[in-house]
Image (cartoon, rainbow, N blue to C red; front, top):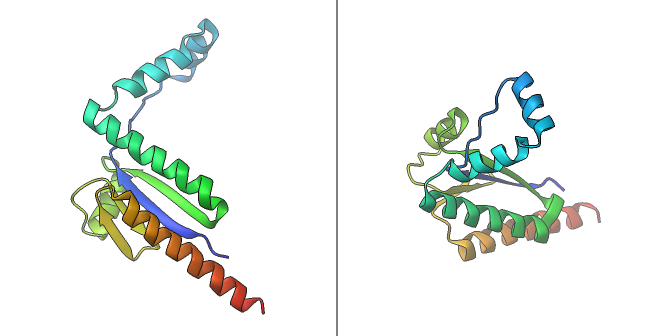
Length: 133
């Protein structure tokens, strides 16, 4: 079965790393992970951080329910790739979800997205069952 493709474009925390030597030094001093967590926590304003957490929780729930039947790709809206995908699908508001390259939805209406994705997974499973007969 080909997995259902889900692209999610949202503002995501961006964390920059130091040079390899500094990273090694920070790791040996025991502060590398703490710096990473602090940088991630400060990477987004509070409202966008809450939005990203909601998206993250939803994605974890999707993967728990459907596992390998999904291929999830989370794109930072501020990245070059996120910008290009937004242009391709004419998306101007985030978060945005694109299912199988056809259906797109802006905003995080979890109930509507779950129904769409559940239907796509069921249809793909049905096609697989029909083909194996």
